[in-house]
Amino acid sequence: MLFLIAIPSYLYLNLFTFPNVPFFLLGDQNFFWVYAMRMFHGERGYQDFFQFTPPGTDLFYLALFRIFGLHLWVTNAAVFILGVALCWICFHVAQRLMERDLAVLTSLLFLVYIYGDRLDATHHWFGLFVGLSALSVVLTERTLPRIAIAGLLLGVASFFTQTTGVAGVASLVAALAWERFSRNRSWQSMLVQQLLLSVTFALTLSVLSTPWLLHVGWRQLWYLQVTYPLHYVVPEHNFWLSDINAPHNRSPLLPLIRRQFLYLLLLVIYPSILWHCWRRRREIAARYTMQLVLICLFGLSLLLVIITRPDLNRIHAASMPAILLMMWAVSRLDKRRSVATAAIWVVIAFLAVKQIRFNQHSPHQTILLPAGKVAVSPLFDEKFSWIMQHTRPEDLFFQAQGAVVYLPLQLFSPAFVDYLWTGEPTRPEYIDRTVRELERQPARYVLWSQQHISRSDGYHAGQNRLAPFYGFLITHYRREHVFSDGDEVWERP
Image: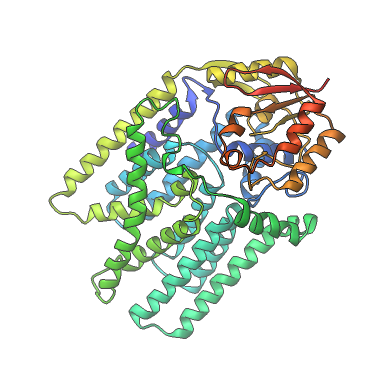
């Protein structure tokens, strides 16, 4: 009962003011709202708007928008639904490893320590949920039907996040090899299982991707989903300290400790558990060995595919297996187990109260926007109010650095790209295309973040590729308004 009440209550109080006004959320999820909004109005991904992730997350938001409309409360409900689903799969897997009360504690620890840190319903979490669902199918038995179901689910996982399904397949292939060597099973049965897994994965992903393959072609899809992220999605150099010095963090030491502990856990737990399982691979009494191996290899694979391009969303999405393994280790403690679990309960309670208190009591204004009533910070109240006074829903508007204004104000971008970066992510051809699109479909206003441009690594390295666009901006637009954070609105005369 505590599990059923605590999770929805925690999520609701972090997503809505009391009683029912949604907080305006930020994060990578804003881009997926806009992709779904553009699809809602008939546009196609990879063809009419830029995207380098598979369309699974777009379709999830699109389904919600088609059912409930283009409202901001829907986006918060999506974060709520996803949080409940992730806690359920975490509990479901944890029950295979430990007692029910510790499985509940594991889910709550994940919710508050990991998911609640950002509440960003981006594609990584959807892929993780489906990937863990696949893992749960084969935890106890690895029969051919279960392997086929796991391959199907991993294909779905890669329809949300390219690397999640691939990591899942790689980890399961390695686990099947582990099982063959540790238990002297036949080569033939192992190869049949691995082949079945790979074929069902590839077929599922191919079938799901068929509409986009037919509309944009395999070359465009391969470029945007594979070539582009491999070559041009650069790592966030300050991700270890990201958000630590943000204005809302009055005590930056606490988030610093939290995140450094998480990074250390990821680096230590996977090799430690694998070594533990290898040493006991022959022991009949080691009933959890293969379950631990599967979870460990899955988490390690998730970590390896992001290790050269880490950011907080990727690190968080790779951490649930580590949390599961850590709590399994806690369950194996003898005299110190009660002390460890009590300490974890204290940490969960402290962080949950702190997060809820911050969200419920931080300065915010309730404002009625075209996408519905929402609670926003004073800065966004200033921006949204000014833009709303000078535009109408369905007007063309271009936000050069971000995707924050479109859904709340029901505005449309005439550009293919979703963000203009100073460095590698924005290719020169996309700058030229954006200029042509704004000449063909002139947006009356452009929101430009000079502060963001000046802080970027590419700007300081002399690699600012936005000079052609900025030249177009100053010759075709005039600066109309400057917000308190330095963002500028440019108007076309």
